[in-house]
Image (cartoon, rainbow, N blue to C red):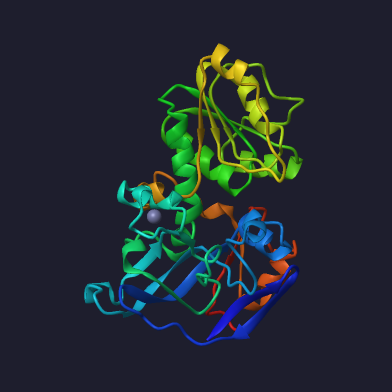
Length: 339
Ligand SMILES: [Zn+2]
């Protein structure tokens, strides 16, 4: 089968590789759609911290925002999975350590991450093997575009949950990229008045097109009380800005990550009685995200600007925009498209 292989920093190719087999406890999925995200770009450029810590090493097979159909099951797997449309958890804990036993397998020290960490091949391929326990079934109303948006959606759902806003509260999201816009959608679905803070006019225009009229730059941001501020940006100064902007007794949520340390003054944190929350991974947010997509409470499909074949992934990772792209921030890949 064909798969995207990263052989070193800046080196990406589609290669013919052995098709996966369904080992005990696992299934094989025919991949229908995969999202390309910032983590994939950092694996391509060599900037991802896991490459430094040894949690990831080349050659790598990326892709962790995916959906597809189960076409083989290994020993010990319920055959009822065969033929079902699914997505899956990126985080695969060892299932034996203290954290895993307490239901926090997404922070397992020995975890694999599909397409990212621990030598677990990813979904930018015609087929993918994953543990059956990591699967989430997709209802018919969650099409392949939505299916491949469940993983980023799960991250955003958790950020919105951590913001703990109620109807009528006001929230600010810093960074109108995929995660920021998804978070804004989940916050809006909770009844909050949602503002976005960004840098480029194009990204703010795109946000307005999604119905977020209150899309600002640092210079135009109105002086309003924000009950929660979510940092979904990659700027090192954003967490401190979030802490400055949030109302006393409010919440700051950190889901964006910068390339250098982000510092805050904890005196401000306590003097303002602020609750700060960090979010890593979609895991506990996958099921509620599928539910929100199924009912239409949140529909992020306009975020997808183009859908390309595997052969174009290298150009996308290098920062290129596919020909005929829309204005959205997310590129999707359909491995079934001809090379
Ligand atoms: Zn574990």
